[in-house]
Amino acid sequence: MEKVIQGAQGKKKVNKITTFPVPFKLEGIQENITIATYTSDNPSKEKILNQAFKFHSQGNILEAAKNYQKFIDKGFKDHRVFSNYGIILKDHGKLEEAELSTRKAIDIKPDFAYAHYNLGNILSDLGKLEEAIFSQQKAIKLKPDFANAYSNLGAIFLNLGKLEEAHSCYKKALYLNKNLDEATEGIGEIHLRKGDFHDGIFYLRKANGSINFNYTKSHFFIN
Image (cartoon, rainbow, N blue to C red; front, side, top):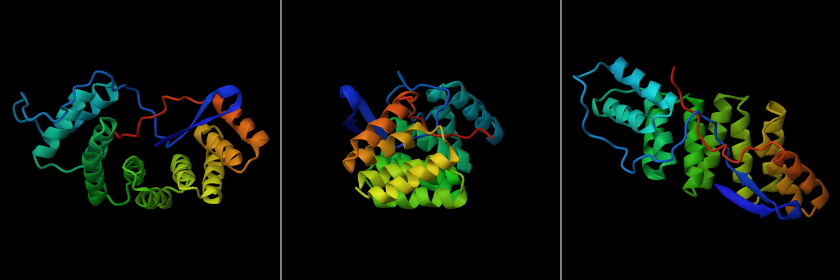
């Protein structure tokens, strides 16, 4: 979810839901990532799992997706598989499928904070902001030091126009991680919305000094 505003000197400032960076890019991936066929001779559960994690960590998203799908098709269950596959589906714009896969991860492991976090991001993209709030709050309850979840919760409140709630979340995120530029940027937008242009521009400039506008991937697990 992104909201573009104008900052100092006409530069674009982006207030967005933040996700975890992972070492891969998604450019050039085939549109249909659900592959029904597989050439291995009935590999074991652990072998498929290890192959999926290996390909995912290497940035080979198509092969990772094939292995996740094979794992699921065989009836195997692992919360990391459904969560990671949900990330891939989300990044390909398949939000409804991503939501289902991530909810399956939560069904398997209800205390998996990162799945609740990822679900919150998916729900935000779907425009289900009240549900997204619940998911981010659940992630925080399970992982009280989850700075990114606080920041994303702040972004949701900001998009709902709940400035005080947003400010509180952003401040907590920065308390936990002072280098979380998206939270700094969010505070800047709150100041601008309140008409405090001096502080608003200060925070936006501060964030713009180091913010990575490609910081758009979700967190996945390999162990």
